[in-house]
Structures are given as structure tokens and as C-alpha cells.
Picture (cartoon, one colour):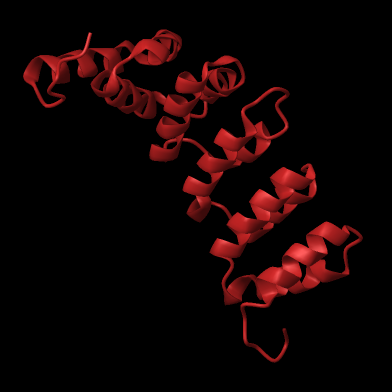
Length: 178
């Protein structure tokens, strides 16, 4: 149960104990998220973000597939807050059947600075139209002048939707070669 004060010593002690429990606590914490109050949710997300690693990432993906809306929101918050796992795992998770794609795309957006333009472009080409559009929106936010050669090189591709998104991104740059 949560205390009303997250900074209270007993609450901090309980959070530390959960973190020390390690990856075995992930499933139990995710199971508690739907009934957790605001303070408990913050504490659980703190623990979940501390426990995410490349090795534990599949447990988080499973929660994004099977979890309740509150569990999915908590896991998404934890994954957005943590930098302790390789970001390509998020792009790989896009192909997981039944995953909460909107939550996953929100996480990718929150982690956007960890991706290269090439990684996002490659992932976008493999997606359905809605996910493709979301990834291109993220691309538009991170694309800078260094990304121009990669984007210009993709203009000759066969995917009309991707070409339109790339043209839209390129339209922001006032350069002679664009």
C-alpha cells in the first residue's frame, strides 16, 4: 500500500526493497498498476523504470500486449523514463502482434533522440499507414541538416506514402539541394 507522501522514509524503503527484488518483481508490479492510487503508481513506475534492461525488456513488451489500460500506461511511462535498454528494441516491438501500438509509439517519441534517422526510416517502411505516419512525424522532429542526404536518397523509393512524408520533412529546409 502507498503512503500519501512519496518521500516518507517508509515509502522510500519499500521502493528500495522492490528495486532490490529485481526482475522477479516486474510482473507483480504490473499486476498492481490497475488498482494503484496516484502515489503508488508513481512509486511503481519508478521501480519499473529502474528494472528495465535489455534482458527484462520482453516482460515489458508482454505487459504492453496483455495489460489493462492503466498497466499499459504505467509501463509506457517507465519505458519513456528509462535509458537503460537499447532503443532498437522499441522498433523491434512494433512487429509484436497485439501490442498497444499507440503506447509504443508514444514511448518511441519520448525516446526519439536515441534513434538515428536511418533507424526510424527503416522501421517506418515496415509499418501500416497509421504507424508509418506516426514514425514520420517523429522523424520530422529529429531531422536536421545532417539527415538531408539520407532523406534525399529515399525520394526515389517506390513507397508513395513514404515519399510524401519525406517531401513534407524536406520542405522545412531552405537549402539549394532540397
